[in-house]
Image (cartoon, rainbow, N blue to C red; front, side):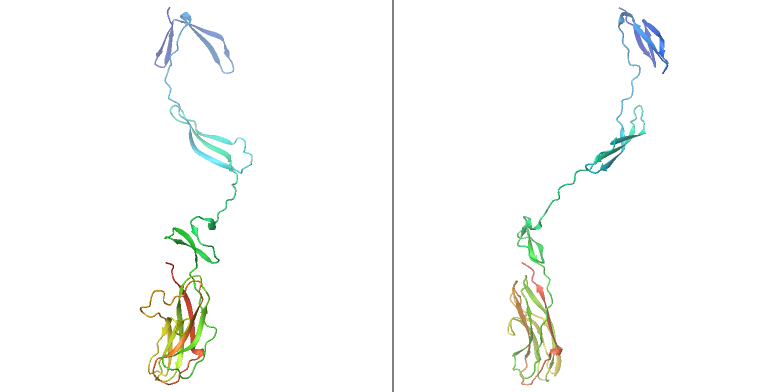
Length: 286
C-alpha cells in the first residue's frame, strides 16, 4: 500500500499521494476555513514542522505580603498577579505578586521567675542583688556593698591632767549590723590645747579605747596648741581580719585622745573643734 509522502522543506510541509478537500464553509467570526487531508490507504503521520524553545517558569520579581489581623476576613481575591514582562521563546515572563494573609493568633502571655531559676542559690532579701559565684557555678543573693556615713550623736569637752598612755574618750560611733563584713574608714580631728610638754595622740578603736586600732593621728612636741588629724590606720603586721567587723554584727568605734609624753601638764579638747565620722568599707567575699 502506498503511503502519503509528508516531508519538511525548510519551513514548509510537503504532502503527496493524498486527497485534499477544502470544505465550502468557514467561520465568519474569525475567517477560519476547514481543509481535510485524506491520505491514500487511510493512514498517515504528520511530523513536527519546527522544534520550539523549551518553556520557562515565570519569574516573581516582587512578592509582597499584606498582613490582615487574625479573625478578619481576607479580601477577594487574596492574591493579585501583576504582569511585568510577557516573556517569549526561551524568555521567562515576569510578575509581581501581592498576597493577603491573616496574622497568627496572639499567644498566651508567658511568665518567668528569676527566683525559680535552677542556677540560683540563697534567699531573696530586700535591697540585695545577684552575684555570680564561679566556685559554685551559680548566681547567689548578695547584699549591695554600699556603706553609709556614720557620725557621733555627741562629743565630749575634756580637760585636766591624764596620766601618760591613759586614753581619754572624746566620743564614739555606733554602727548597726550590716549584711556584709567591713572595715571602718575613719576621718576626724581635734584641736588640743596644752603646753609645750604635752604630746597628744588621737586614736579610733573597735569596741573600746583599748580595742583594735582602726585609726590614728600623731601629735608633735613643742606645740602648746595643735590640731591632730585622724586617718584610717591599722598597725603594720596585723593579722588577717584585724580591724574588721563581721557581717550581721553591730560595732562601736571609740575616739580617744592619749597623752604619750611623761608630763603632768594639763590639756583640753573641745566639742566645737572635734570632728569624727566613718564609712564602712565592705570586705570582698572570698
